[in-house]
Length: 311
Image (tube, rainbow, N blue to C red):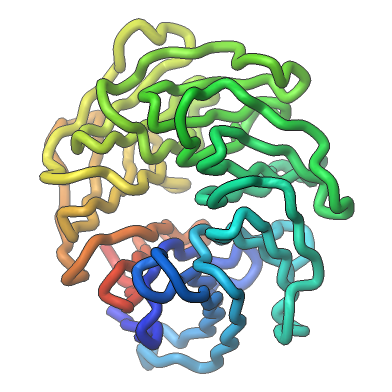
């Protein structure tokens, strides 16, 4: 296990680079994100020696709550901030953002960059109850999606359908959107009797996605029959902050929770976690599974530490 100290910055999001397997981005905030600034850490690590080999620190005036890498330009990444702005960074020129997007009225808590090789669009989800679609080369959003009554915690592109994304909200609603129809989601269901904090698409099946709720439940859904979840996973003692479907096995997923744990699940075999790791001494907020190395994971939390580990 490799541990990174984030210098009294509380971790919100962590992501492996899709282009460089030993490079991590960590989005953090001062004072638990309630006030103060945010720092984006870019860490190049050596797994054999379990040590940090290079580090960039990039500072913003408000907390940074999510981060995502560009898949086409290796040095670009985007963060979402507590002041409602979105920052595009180039780690080859780390002094300041190369572009700033200013439209959201409240915190931007989720950022996602389209995963296919044709489209180059960014989604942002905000506490202002909206999702916005961005062309990274333009300063104004292309479309605003308003289909939730409360803050939107996360929006994620489908890995199979380029014009489709999912959103989840404090209103307990899971929405499935067609980008060309901004007025309302194509599908809208009451997926949890609680706030939904996170979602993730299955990387092998185009109709399967997962949601995590503040009541501690993880639910697996089939878009073709959304009356009830096809699986329900129980074992988190507090809110599920993030879920991520594995890019290496169709029924494996990971979760992090306010119960300080990172859990690994195989919903094809059991509704109980296969592994449970308590890597942190405070809420765990960030989670990522390496896209290139099976079994390699990373998480970060409010204890101002980030960890890379094998499962």
